[in-house]
Image (cartoon, rainbow, N blue to C red; front, side, top):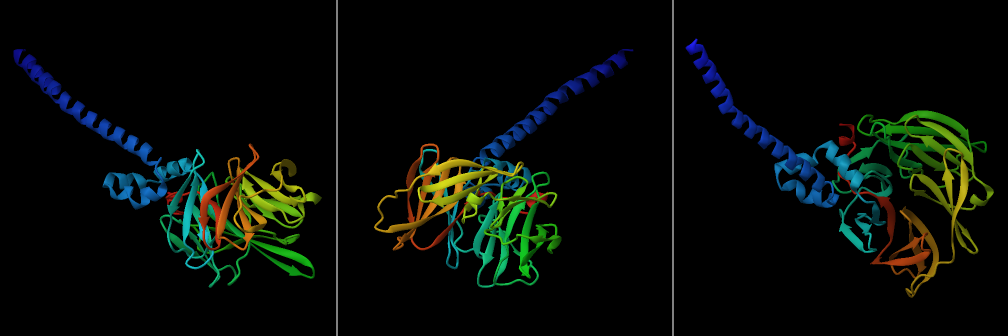
Length: 371
């Protein structure tokens, strides 16, 4: 009986003596996990260029965090859109312009060479067209992960209306293109899709006849809709179901409007003698609504005459404008605030001709999006 009590006492003592070690191990693991969460949160708040060029080389732990697909998505959700300013001349170098909340400007030098000129951007990926060869490429402008897009029906030296979009429910990137051909006065359109990282060939999913004289590249709203515009219609495509809903344009919007993504909808800007009118489109009802009137814009003196304006992007309440001046002083960038009705000019001028595209810097790739 005494020996049994003694044995129980020894077991009890051994158990109690090991508890502090287990507790210490658990505390260490909890502390390590807590540090990972803290670093995860901090790193998602830093610029993507800094993460790619500097932070990932600090230590293996940081590199592992930044290589995680959940981190990439979290960083993308916090990234602030800006302007991808790209030279129109080979080798197509670019800068990223971010407008700060205080009105200041942060300029980030990007890569000095790209596989063509940017056509559109989606969640940090961009579609580029190479005029010399007619090739399309998809690339992340920061990480420079690049893939050559297969030629569509052998088409070279001229790209069809096309755009990259992302299905919210699956996270996969899709590349859409349309080839419209005219037969006996009637346009016949062939629609194609390529799923990045999944397919290596284009798939035709619809052929239709009608008004398919496209006026600009398709515009992605950031959700499920991709807008294709012709002289008389707006065609709303569901990028997940790959179905269409056509809507006729009102007569007042058939005079060379400039189309832009505005939040998650489509906007059209038309020129009038009194300035400009902005209209917005509701994809559910197919109705256009007058949104804002812009009077004649008086730019700060540049020693040049402004001939026209190229409306480039919406950033919250700011309409980013590239004035076209003669003689050209280079690329000027202005902004119009629809809330305050005020025009401002960035304290920034770039020599030469440049293209402006709304873009978000991220570390995403078509491969990490599928993991």
